[in-house]
Image (cartoon, rainbow, N blue to C red):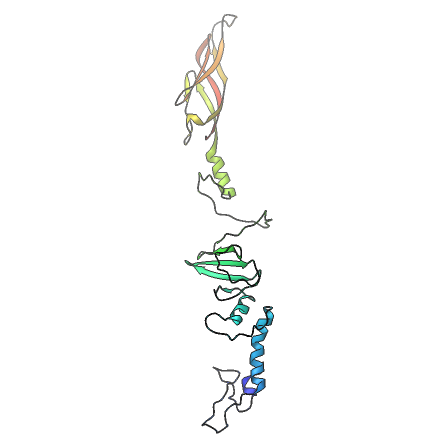
Length: 259
């Protein structure tokens, strides 16, 4: 486009109007103002036509107005994402933006000559929501391949839904989900569930004789055994020898898994 100051009888550029400006006549008929010539209008109109050309549309022959006839605005909306307008027409795959309840909604046009409302899913697809916190949602991806180190919010402990589980959540969940305890008890000793678990969480238990103190003669009349019983609040282990001279002891290992 030509600079305005390049036309005859125009004002030179200023800080406010760096490319010059048109000049009015000092008085009617003085002919000292800037003349409107064909090249002036051609320069102006073809600057506007280029927007339509970039949008792939032809002038429709109607005068632009402020209500229903907005071909220039429609052309802008088909070049770059703009706020959606009910009076604009969009081509297929063009993007429109709508702001509702402080959330930016990004839509993709599914049809050519699209003047439908955004709620019409045959014509518009909601592809993203941008909240004030900058969180994106409503983006449907089919088996995306991620690279680098993708991150996700860590769900609260005990979460049981389709939310993505981070490694931090899995580690905490596993630690809180399964517990293995071991040790030894004397004859008739009891074992209680670890903190956070109940007897309903007992998945496995195995005792074995750890130590027996014999006295007298051990022969065919003697017996040694280790048994256990599961009670409502604990496990009782009994380890015994008929020739023992002191309390026997048993090792054990217990596996607890939250139900």
